[in-house]
Image (tube, rainbow, N blue to C red):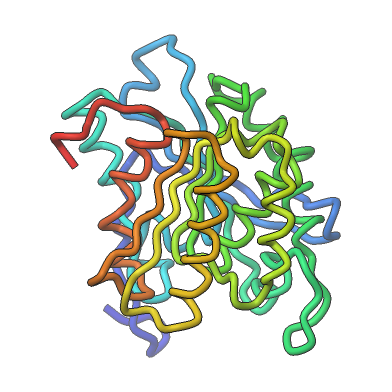
Length: 266
């Protein structure tokens, strides 16, 4: 199929994924679309659900909007719900395209410019989360509120638990770009809530030396300072820096973070 001569891809998002109107990001003086995945049971129940906040929303649910393929978050969670009763709401915030490298970096960078990561995570906590908690049946406590992303999204997820430890009690750090912001290691070590935060850290062995080095440094830090049984660090020998890898590890990551019972299923 083509539109005005440009190829288009049919949407692969499941029916329980909803594209929400753009909201104002007051901290950044811009607007942003976000996407909400609701469990298939949502409309037929009165349950309240944990919430997973994710970045790069265009790449999570739909081949039609993804850059090089989707994560398959909706398909994965629909499957986990049916096989082992693991359910959650997912809020995927679209990335800012050319602004991505500054929005998702908490520190200034000579190559990419002034970091906007503080303002971005403040938007999540002070503007978007209250909206989500008001509009949907959520479990709003930190023990039920996770943040997850890959690459720069992994970096900003790490920053989110450091800057707002009272809000985010769970974090999925996939292929985090520590090479661009090594300062985050010391900040994480100083995080007073680190011992009470569940963390799933994973990087692919085929992502390159700088990625492996950053993974090893953070894994060592978690071993020294995180709470026992509160973290898992996985260097996946076959993992590459792409959505296929993150799709593969997503089910086991959410199962660990939300203390699911899917160990024999994922």
